Image 1 (cartoon, rainbow, N blue to C red):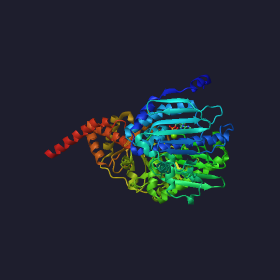
Image 2 (image 1 turned 135 degrees about the vertical axis):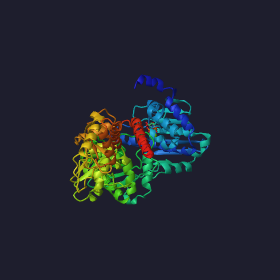
Image 3 (image 1 turned 90 degrees about the vertical axis):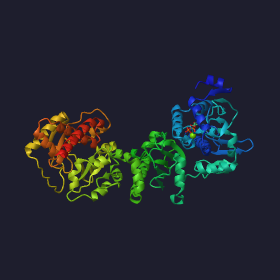
Length: 630
Ligand code: ADP
Ligand code: MG
């Protein structure tokens, strides 16, 4: 900061233009819905509360602050005749430069994101504004003039004022203010005078700001509950208070799917409320990326976006964690590695796992919702977090060949294996429908063996780390050497070896170096053909991942297996025996190959099949026409 320039400009009032993005934002807000407008108060109170939290933190880490004795509180007064309200806090305050920075030149990206969202979705702006880091401007839904007077907690800082009248500029200047904190005077527009009313304000505070951690006074009377909900014994909390606190904490408009309230004093002091949201995407750009847990020590907020409190795969969990045992003035790194923190982490993790397992047992529909939204995180955890493997395995769910719409756990699967089955079988495909049509299923369906369906990229990623479950290996059923329990007699074929060999030769010629070999299948029953891997090693999963990601890979040539007993194969063999270069045989070989890729989700250009399909249709039409004539 250049002090010379500061004393110069700091002594007079200066007019500054809002950034273009702010101007757009103000324009949208001026035309916001009536029903949204009360949100402005929530945003101003939330800023005051943030400033108080930061002050609290400064006081425990820094001795030299202005007004150390001042009560940490928010005061609100309404003046009906003047059509104003005044909101004051004893938080950290702002200097003149901080006001210009924070109240005039907001991060372009977040303003732009908000403007885009508001325009595109016609969503109610009040619902979403706070999540974009532009909450302060919500006041311009109701105000035609706003004055901010502030003095920073720093001893050498000077007080300053900021004023805007809803056009494209604001004015900053010096102020005589002596005490620490910020006062905002809102001059309401004519049609917003309902808000200059104590009763109306109190109603809004109850609805949106009841759980703010500092007292909110109106006429010297505290109007919020100001309770740290998480510090109360769970049995004393009313069940509706949990979703209500969740909404105030996260600004989500849906209720959470699950809440977990922990309150223990030993072996570690720990008070926490954790929430499982209903949805992963809330239709907006997530602003909080670092972590979704607020970390308190003795009710002082020490980290607003704490990460590493929960394992990475639970990073969608939101909530508050509070412990008396955490030292207040500890560095971030210190917090991470302290032994108290490790105990807290393990207590939270095991409780969350327990609650999720309970949810699965007692409320399968809610669990299915959880799985739909957050299953990918669990799958990712399987691949990357070995330490939590056992817990994660319990949370996994699958669709299978026999489960219909139900989700199946590995434990369920294990309980249903057939006699002699020692492995867990899975098939990979483009989607559930394709998986259920996979030719690889033929021998398993014949034996009544259930197969897990693996259909997305994250499944493939998970498989790189999921090799067995309770002593049972997971086995991809496209393995050429698959040994299955039980018997399934080979189907009779009308073809001679010689006829079949000729067909194999012609298919091999048609497919060239895309395949390594064409041979008879011992397992196919309902399907004419399948592709199998030559080398069924772990490298396969990586190759599939690369292919699904559209990366350039040199796919290994695969083996085309033909079902000698299938009518299509029989007909093609007859043709191959009659002619050495029958175009229908070549086109059919190509199409069988493409069909296999398509079901596996690995076909890169299905439209290219159309001319060939038409060629085959034409041949079919011609031959059936010939039959009619006979
Ligand atoms: P956000 O609160 O998400 O950062 P806002 O638009 O609500 O976004 O506020 C912008 C910034 O203005 C805040 O981050 C803070 O630095 C500053 N600010 C607003 N109100 C106050 C206040 N009462 N005391 C101190 N700083 C404030
Ligand atoms: Mg804010």
